[in-house]
Image (cartoon, rainbow, N blue to C red; front, side, top):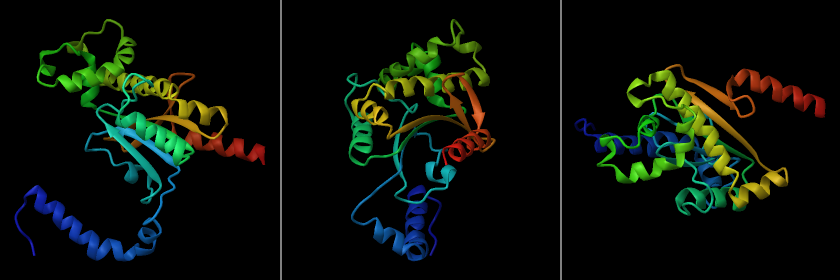
Length: 227
């Protein structure tokens, strides 16, 4: 039975397909998740609708603990004790995740806003304007570049700087500091190039991006030496 093209009807049709087709094929997986979860990774990314964390990482339900917000922001500990901070504390302190990923992306509207937080365009978005203040230090990395002169590459650079800044903020959270000190946690910054379908790893030491392939090769070589 089909009924119109209304978004809600489409969503409900998807739910029906999940219940009748998808769930039965993975019933054992969902039953195993019924009473507990043990995700390996806390994945912090933008609320942008074009990003699907499970799709780009090819992970199953239960593997990622996902936090989404405008601009993939992580307020420094103590500046805003809210949803992001509590999710980090729970994921790292209670669920004992082994990895935390902060993932920015191309053509990010939040980065466009960050270019000029005094723009009249934000007058009707006071909460967004206040929230993006947690990324102001990343904006400073672009110097005196005016918002009207910023091109796609500048927005991309800002998105990458913002990921690095949020990793710095992440390291102010007590649960993260404790897990890092005990060697129980790894942090990594990603940049998702949407039109290319490519993930790049942001190297904090060089402030440059690396391909997934090069990082994987290095990780495998390190594990081989350890063995």
